[in-house]
Length: 124
Image 1 (cartoon, rainbow, N blue to C red):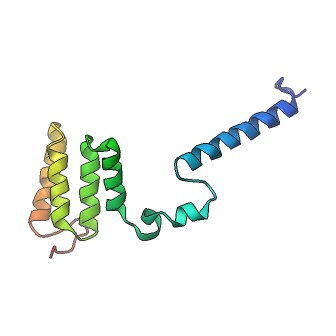
Image 2 (cartoon, rainbow, N blue to C red):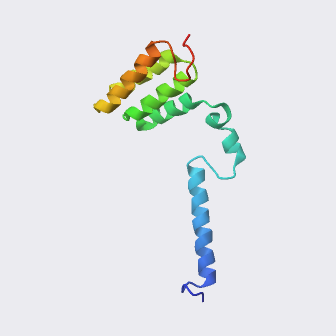
């Protein structure tokens, strides 16, 4: 027996069960800590397709959160697509009544409409 009162064999078994459960959970969520095929097959990781990933999140049921639409708009603008960025921003704006959030989005919209995108370069 160890000072903690747990026999070493039982402690080892608990550690193995916990590690197995963590790995099984990661695989169920399409991510394994050391699985290079899952990581390299992920378009967000390999190609930086953030807008596609955000759209999948929205389609999976998170579309009622205005932040998802704001982040989608940012992803579009950062990839150079200001038109889609403004549409996503409008979608975010209609999903919130928080005055601070509305002001933030109006400010972003004004900047985008003036011809400068989030990266500081001119919009086409």
